[in-house]
Structure formats: structure tokens, C-alpha cells
Image 1: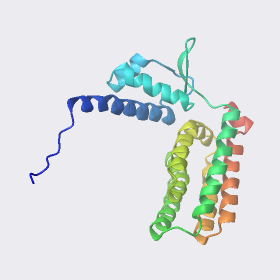
Image 2: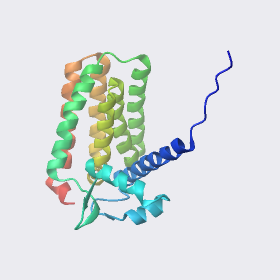
Image 3: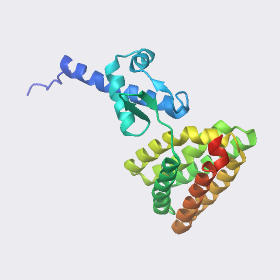
Image 4: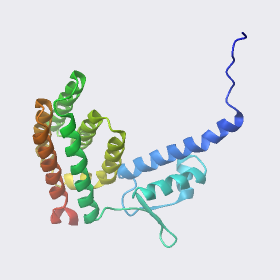
Length: 232
């Protein structure tokens, strides 16, 4: 029997895949720029300027912006154009209520079920947070805080939970950076709360892990919603 040869992808198939890759790249980069604060809330965006910045045509940028609008990162209207969307008080409350439901479920499910590698990853996360506190590295602590929460979701393994957590993190990142700069002490308190959650997970106490996760997120919500910080 003659050997079977694999056909090369057609030029048409290759060309069709290119717009999809460009759309994904445009989406990822624009979401990063919004989450990082490089495009703060209230910023007016231009498809033409974004296309030039990303070195691509307007079409993938337009598709990416429509996706970002559906996820609540921007608003698009005939009157105002494209604007980076800020978070209202109701948005922040909704954000934390959803995280409380997701994260309390996730930590409750993984408590007492971690592999040795996962246990080591969790302990390393706490060590890194302690080291950042000693250095006084606020930016690193904010990043490590987000990674700690995502790590626990990753242990559960539900891809929808992980994707939702990533989207929620990006939406509120700017707010967290702003309010934390007014009270860096909250980060030290947060690390201690992380340690309590981690201990409950490692000890296999699912009910305690879930309660501590809710209490931790509630404390973060109250910190952000302080009238003094919201006005700043």
C-alpha cells in the first residue's frame, strides 16, 4: 500500500484563519490596555488610531471592541462613540457578590483534595506575598493577590469558572489600584486573610474555607465602597 501523504493547508484556509488571529490579538491587547489603566475609565477610543497602534486594519479592531462592549469593558454609541466604561457602585456590589458565590464554592470543593504540587504552589503563593510585603511592593502585591484567587479557581479545574474569574479581575483592577494607593495597609490584612483561607483548604475544612473566602471578599468590597475612597 502506498504511503499516505498529508495535504498542506490550502491558501484559502490559511487566509481565513488570519482574521481570527488578528481579532484575538486585538481583543487581548485592548483588554490588557483597559485593565492596566493605560486606557482609564472615560477614555474615548478611535478605531482608526487603535488600528494604527496595533498595526492592523480596522476590521479586527472593530470586532474586538464589539466583544469588549458585550463584556462591559467599553460602551459604543452613535452619540458618544467608543468610551472605556467605569464601574458604578452597583457594578462593584455585583462583582463581589458573584465572586463570593464562585470562590466560596471553589475553595469548598478543593479543600482537602489538593495534590502535593498544588499544596506547594499554594504555600509558594503565600511566601511570595510575604516577601512583597517586606519589600513594600504594592504593585506586586496587587498582582499576587489576583493570582492567589485565580490559583484556587485553577485547582478546581472548571474552565468557565477560571474564565469568569479572569474577566472579573480585569474589570475591577483599575479600581483596586486606585483605592489601595490610599490605604496600602489593606494589602497586609488581605494576605493574612489569604493565609486563613489557605490553611482551611490545606486542612480539608471546606465549610471554614468557604466562610473565610466570603468574609475576605466582603472586607474587600467594604474597603472599596468606603465613601471617602470612592470620592478620591
